[in-house]
Length: 173
Image (tube, rainbow, N blue to C red; front, side):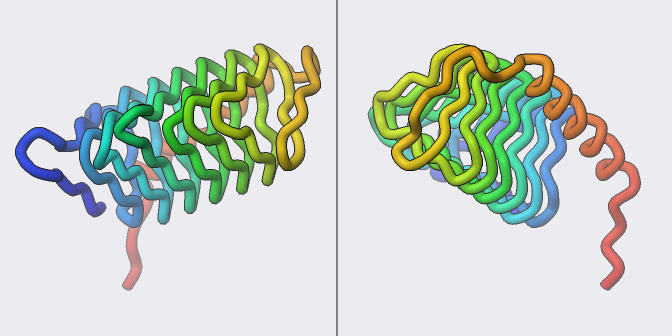
């Protein structure tokens, strides 16, 4: 897996219990906590600030995580970042989910138990309320329509998937 330091002080920190697919890329001040996973073609580029992925959270295929000098990107525990999602300088609180192709920008917060739907855009500075769904471009919020339990089930699925990949993935070429 490509893991890059940027100078002497900007080096990824990967917990031994985290899983990073060989085709994922980590650059700079990236912190992966225990049970987290980063899947094929995901790019986590922390060249301006910190990007932290909490315990048991997954960054799925093709996702791009970045930050700015002003805004770090923080992903809490038990979160799911869907395929081809883009997070930049934002916060995902515990047990939240950002769907495939969604974009969450500078200073935005996806609160605990919230879900950002596929291809939605959460503009900079917006806060998705706890247990709400954010749908559309720009995202409109539907409060109290999501379940923390469903987000936790999704996160747990990827923890188990990472365990399997760690022991069973075999390159054949």
